[in-house]
Amino acid sequence: MKATLPKLSSAMTASTGAQALEIGQISPVVENVLASTEIIDIHTHLFAPSFGKLGLWGIDELLTYHYLEAEFFRSSHTTPDQYFALSKTQQADAIWRALFVENTPLSESTRGVVAVLKAFGLRTDAQNLAEARAFFGSQSVDEHIHRVFEMAGISTVVMTNDPLDPQEAPIWLNGVSEHPQFRAVLRLDKILRQWTANWQVLAGQRYKVDAQASEKSAAEVQRFLFDWCKRMRPMYMAVSLPDTFLYPAETAGNRLLTEAVLPACLELNLPLSLMIGVRLQVNPALRLAGDALGRADLRSLENICRTFPENRFLVSVLSRENQHELCVYARKFSNLMPFGCWWFLNNPSIVEEITRERIEMLGTSFIPQHSDARVLEQVIYKWSNTRRTLAPILANSYRLLVEDGGRVSRNDIERDITRLFRSNAESWMNFNKS
Ligand code: RAT
Ligand code: ZN
Image 1 (cartoon, rainbow, N blue to C red):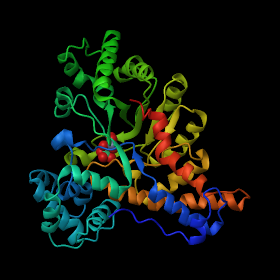
Image 2: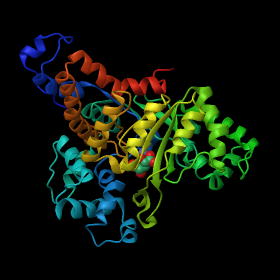
Image 3: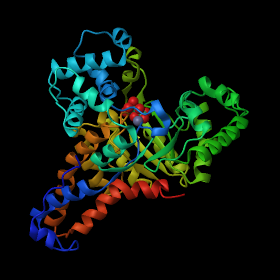
């Protein structure tokens, strides 16, 4: 199933792309262009097939997504300890029963599973997972990936690659062949946020670092980053930061950020992605589902953008309360690119609010969304939902422009949607570099 393009009237298809559109023509053209623009998904947790079991797909993975696990504990008497003692298939069965059979799947994440089943022509109201398991079990991964990307209308996904992950690092060290549709990102959480727990891993790889993150360590971390960038050829470097993040402040993480990461990004011409606002493990019993969010002090972001004008920053903030400030800072600092409606924000009501605000304040100089998909097929529903939510917002912006005396053509709409979903990413991340 490929996304069906909205039908345009013959008068509209006969007209040239440069002709001014009437108000009544705007919506179908926006929907049509959105449906036919292949998106670059700039932040996911997906993996290319060469990463083997790290790449998650299929019904059991879809159902045990941590967004759904958090919802499961609200509708079941199963405790987290009992749940995590089950096998993956037992966990998926329990979630299916609690959230899809015994309750109506109304939440964003549950509806997503329904949409994926529907997209593959599977029953969405089955009592058990037999049919879905048989279907996904019979797919071959390479063809399946190709089909899923087509169904989602995406050309490329950007992975999240952790050089200190004990499962992932050996795969890189053994050498992986590049996949044209999966691009890498060098993730720095363990270095910038948990130096004390991780410096010895670098030391074990013969980088001369110490627990204090001394000046000598910073130079060695930089050497580590250069080595890993050569290996991964990342699109950018990235870190997720807590709501309490402060810059400047005397911490090992800030010292390494200033003395190793930012100079390396500059030298390699890579942006740094800052994802700010997570409150890690407020309920550790829920494991991956145990994180929450908090409002951050974005004056730290202001300080960073001002102090490092030559560096480029891709920024997503997790708190709804920080969104307006982020737009204001983007107006002050052209080295700041807001992106995505991340995690707890990826719900239609909040995506709508944030995207309207961004268009009103920034035009098309931002990246509206990323999927954050952890399981391959999630890109189908996440991108379909983004297109569905954004179409009326964009159409309304063009309508206001025309009402105010402006003119808009199909070519204009194509250029704008391409900028939002492709060119901003391509130009900021040197996407096409060899
Ligand atoms: O959205 C998520 O799946 C979160 O668990 C996080 O992984 C977040 O997206 C991140 O990249 O830190
Ligand atoms: Zn993520």
